[in-house]
Length: 387
Image 1 (tube, rainbow, N blue to C red):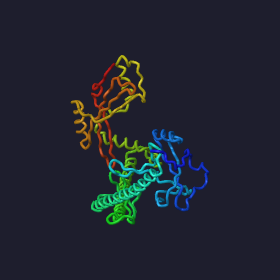
Image 2 (cartoon, rainbow, N blue to C red):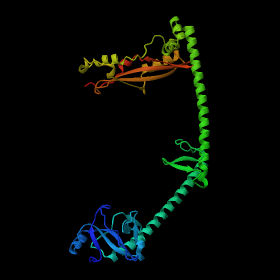
Image 3 (cartoon, rainbow, N blue to C red):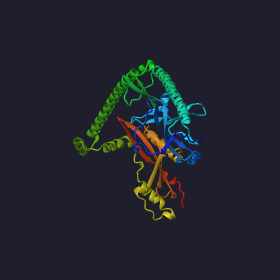
Image 4 (cartoon, rainbow, N blue to C red):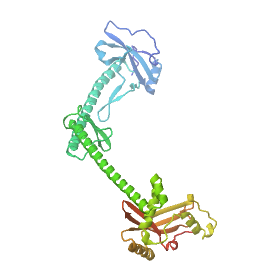
């Protein structure tokens, strides 16, 4: 395009730095309007050839007739601009998209070209806002349908609950869908959605009452068990405790473990003096490791010991025989064969020692008493990988 002689051009400066004279008006028939656009490299070359400044960002002033004032916008500072920015265009799917950059030309445009582009931009802007409003309307309708379907499902399914945080109220509540909270408001929403908050609040209140009653019952049962245990302890101390234990019990300083140990001595008296499983893993592992040449001088501390305990999956003849022997002596007991694997924590290549125990549990009054006995052939059941 040829440079239009009637365009007044100047270098672009940031808004607010220019203090020029007020725009001229042509007896109400035209308005001097600012136009901002960009030139491509080809356009910058053409600008230089035509005597222009060749800058990429151009700011010019043109006289716009009153019949085309709809193509002009005036900002709060009173500056009139031709409506070229933001710029609207059609994409490949013929949807109007908005771009905030000014238009780019390959040659300095004429006044008619600018007015023509402004008119097209004005039409596309209206189409853009129409599309946006239609999109918002469709979105609202879709949201309304989803709301109604969710409300229908919530009201039909008495097992569904609103989120407890924030707490449901007769007016508002949130219902989670795929991990996302959906708001229901009895005053803002319509139809079935309005019924969700009061129903959600009713279910929440009912659950709260049920939970409160259940907690009260649980607390009452726990208090009853506690009182029963206190009576059992007092009876044991009074009838079978030593004078020292009775004095400490009266003062409230007798340890519960001491009483339970005394009860267990009585409960498992039929087992006689069979060796018990002791927590002596440090000494046991150290003695075992010193049988191997690389560990003859090893010193195992409590922090070096790693003990892994689990129910044994297999039992030898000797272990099974011990179980039957103790079961005959303690017929109401529960028996579990336990495997305790002792290892050196800092050295995974060190030999490991497996120790077996037979755990016996008996219920005496309100107490579950436990005692674990050492399996006689445990020392022969070892697994190691000496280096």
